[in-house]
Image (cartoon, rainbow over all chains, first blue to last red; front, side, top):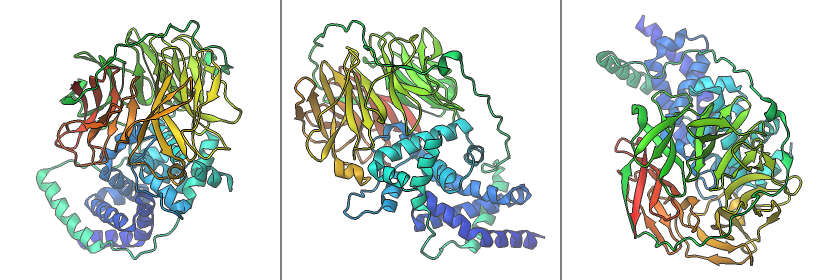
Length: 169
Length: 410
């Protein structure tokens, strides 16, 4: 009985690993850190496997655990919403030849974790506000305000570079 | 909000690439670690914390009153009768400060400071109840007494207050941010914009902020707590955010225009007429924080760093004489500023996570509440006009953010 239960978990996680790892990479921007986040998230998934396998949407359940693991890891940084709105703490990307991806990643990683998660889920995963609010366990209004504050900071930090990106559609 | 979504998709999509390294995730280790955790859970009968239940989120119908449908008028003078310029008594910069924790009402574990009045007698903030879902009790600390204020919406905050105790801020509705004013114990919606935020208020009760949402917010002024919003006139196509309002009704803002690489500091005089502020030098731009008696205070930053998405670890505080357009540079300091008072004294935090105060004559680091283990451990957010009261947030021993006040002396 236990063997089948565990086998089911192993099969599910093994199949979903690439997708979970991709989400973790998009959230944190670092493949090694992404591995740590996924490792922690799938361990939590094991602990809650009874509940998870009974969930109507197992993928959404696993994704929620992963995103919350990422946010919890950087929990304390989230108060930077306002204070660092004009000068986020982030790696220095002022080197010559820095590309758009590096600049956007640097700007994104300067945001509080919850804002990062909101932007990635809404604009890279195309999730609706209601879905994001369920994943993060917050209200829809908070998702909207976090989107607004996050984009405002990106725009401030990226300046012309992001305008150029937005206009090359 | 459509343009906001387009912008988000356009910018974020450059990150959409597949991982390039092999995964080091170990499923068998997750199984063995998971088994151990399950056992511990069973023994300690701890409650599940990561369980997710599908919660049907009821959508709240959008409430718009008649006023909010009106389009704000443009222009007009800001201060009807600007007060005569008064010289404040010269203040001596503080040299040492002590830290103390502010009480959190309601027994909530966490809170922080979001604003203050010019004297530091009134401190504004918000508490984070356990298990909160983005709605916070807004807190006002008034010289030893503490009260909570119910600001409607989510992600609420009060950002500024005058010494009469009138405070301004915003809360989030389904449609976006909603500007609010708190006075005589009551919270009311500021009129004349469908969405917007109130950022600052002066002693005469003139409130400034912005209407609309990212990326198209535009500066507005409410000439009183009951007056409808008026757009501040500016070049067509420009957008931006208000920074501060002076006692004479002058308004400082940081604007963006499609033709410019970096933000542009902008000023409206009490007569409501706007003008761009001069650049500090070729390759630099001015980031203003406060205005007093025809002087704007802030820091200069490099255009290049801004365009490339970098940040300045070291900032050069400046004062800009608004009559002559001359900048005076003060010694550079290694801090990330949050705000400044009318003397241009900056508060913020150091890269190491210590609170910092710069009075133009170098910087003093503020004592930790407990530690500075992270770069956000201690953050000074506001400083009183006399520099004696600095308030902000600091981690306690458990890493939980606490509201704090630093009391400083010469």
